[in-house]
Image (tube, rainbow, N blue to C red; front, side, top):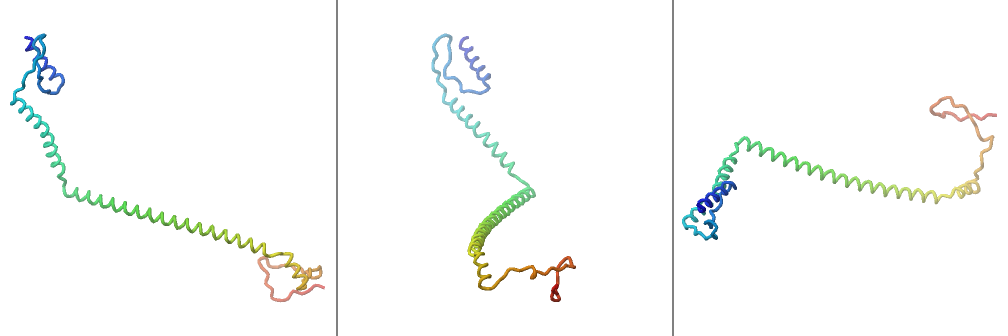
Length: 177
């Protein structure tokens, strides 16, 4: 009875686990210690064949499925090819435009640096011109050497302007007496 109960318990454990497990190498006979039970050679061969079949069956099924899924219709294949080519072309154009923009930005930076250098050089030249011309020296040469005199009240002639935009002089201005 104990022997049949242990076999029953083993079967129940296999069913409970949901996994078919290898048959136990031991059996229980009441309260006696376990004894090793030899597995027959043909049972081991059968078990190995079943394991191999279980391993290869899913692979064969997946290969059959993959073969079935790889069959794509010609219009779909053509559409996908055109889409991939168009995508690659757009990516190429995008990269070309980015490279062009980068080159132009570098050129603009160079021109801005050149403009800054020219402005600095222009300011330096203007400063040197301003410092080289001494207005007191110009005044003394004009008065002493060239005979310049200050205008008096009798040298200044005023007149009324009739046109508002500009003056056109066709004749000499008459002197007031």
